[in-house]
Length: 307
Image (cartoon, rainbow, N blue to C red; front, side, top):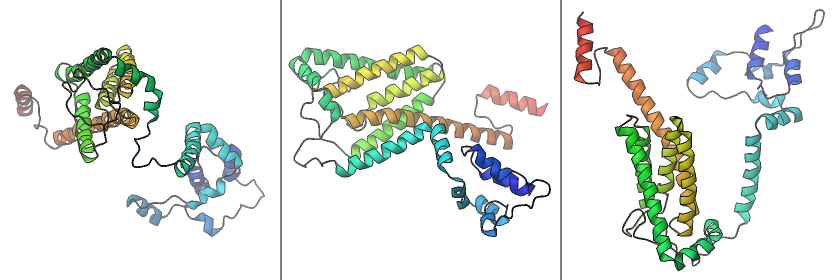
C-alpha cells in the first residue's frame, strides 16, 4: 500500500482539490479493510518495466486515469492557479467564432488593416506635409543607427555576441520570408529618401526589421541591467511603430511579427551560444590540452601538463 500511495501522490497534480488528494492518499485505519483497487485502474499507478521502457524510448503516455480525479473543484483550482491559460482558452473560442464568420476581403479590394484605419488622419497629415514626413523618416533612420551601434558595441567592445547573432538570425529569416511572399505596397505609402534603407530603394514588407532589431537591443540591455536605456528604446520603438503605420511603410502584421521575431531570435541566439559552450566543455574534458584560445593560453596549458 505504501508503494501504491507514493505512486498515486506522484501522478495526482498539485492543482487538484486537497480533499481529493487526502481521500486518495489516506491509509486505512486499524481494523478496517484496505480498499481494493480494481486491476483496470492499477495500470499507470504501479510501476512497470514496460512503462519505463516506453518512457525511455520516447513513447511514454500519461495514464488516462487522470480524468478520474477531475471535478468541479479541480477545474476551479486549475483556473485559480493558471488564470492566463484560462483567458487564452476563452480568446481561442472567441477568435474561432470570428474566423468562421468574418467576411473575406474580395480579391479586387485593398487589404483590410486596422492599424491603417487608426492612423488614417496621421497618414493624411504626412501626405500634406512632405517635409515633416522626411524629418520623421530621418529621425527613424537615426534610431536604426542607434540600434546598430549598440549591437555592434556589445560585440566588438564588450565581447558579448548574443545580440549580433540574434540580428544575423533575424535578418536571414526576414530575407527568406520576404523573398518568398512579396506583399503589395499600400496605395497611401508615403516614402522618403531619408528613410532607412536610405534612397527610396525597394524593401521587404514582411516582417519589420526596424521593430525586431529594436527588440533585440532592448532585451540585451535588460540582461545587462540597463533598464533606463531599455525603456527608452521601447518608447522609441512605439513611436517608430506609429510612424511606420502612418506612412504605410509596414502593415500591422509586419510590425507585430517583428516584435515576436525579436524575442524568438534572441532566445535562439542564447541556445546557440549555450550549445557551443557545452560542446567546448566536452572537448576540453576529452582532451585537456585542447583550447580555442590564444597561443599564450595554449603554451600555459602545455607547461602545466608537462610539469
